[in-house]
Image (cartoon, rainbow, N blue to C red; front, side):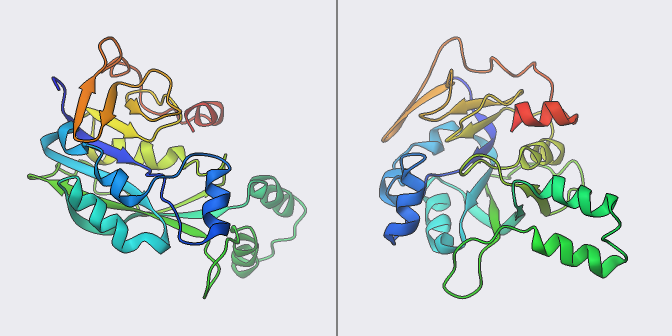
Length: 237
């Protein structure tokens, strides 16, 4: 590998122990066993000092730590970001309630917001958040912006699609460093990509080794950061 990445953003295709959750995931993308994800040579992509920002679900806390360590990283926080999942139609319904005067005070607004959070499964409480851990190798990266907050409120997109806002906050947190998104399904500006649904991946990952794809690596480095206008957010998501 000629290029090494200082920031690695990953959304692994976790497999689940129950047929309902696993079946729902596999209807949209191929899941992988933990041992197979561990064998992907992410350590070959990482610079000497690097950060791994990785999504995991509440059922996979231990597996997430195992995976980060298998890739050569040490977990620093399990809650780098917490995504509060809103229903897909939340924006329109909240705007309608505000316009029609249904929100009289702060507590009305909290009730409205809570009503619009996604209700997923759960053996105890019903899940409506997802977390992203932050792990480092070497000295990690310097934090360039001390004002980046943990909680992200964002509506659901396509199945398993993560909010564009998290990628953008990572850019603000660590700056314009060489970066790649793993298990990617989009081509966000300023990022290299890898995934079986990714168009123009920058690398090939095989168990035990990685190969740079000439002509694609660093191709997006000169593009602007994630846009902040609504139309741009939709393109970048």
